[in-house]
Image 1 (cartoon, one colour):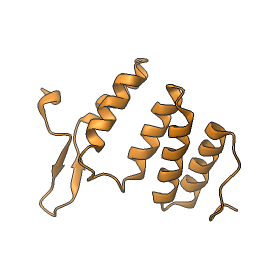
Image 2 (image 1 turned 90 degrees about the vertical axis):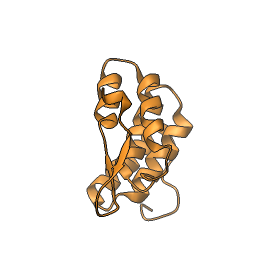
Image 3 (image 1 turned 180 degrees about the vertical axis):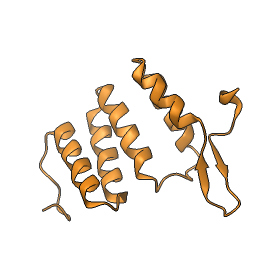
Image 4 (image 1 turned 30 degrees about the horizontal axis):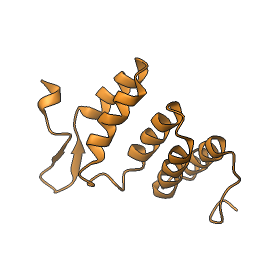
Length: 111
């Protein structure tokens, strides 16, 4: 059963691979249960091994936005933006941060 698998599994090169939880969280969110999906994502993030994975933070941000937790969502969009290496993705994540927070960009690479 997928729920019995670990959220992350180390590979032979020591890197962490995301298991089935990420797909499960998306499916749960699409069914309209953002709170439950956030719980799945948070359990995936609990180890800290994925803290530098920008898509984890952007996923958390979107779920927090859906739940009306805009300050937390803005912080997660900012974290995802800071971790992303592609300038197009960084610009998109910054636009989502601004949209959620209603505040202009903070001092940094987007000023």
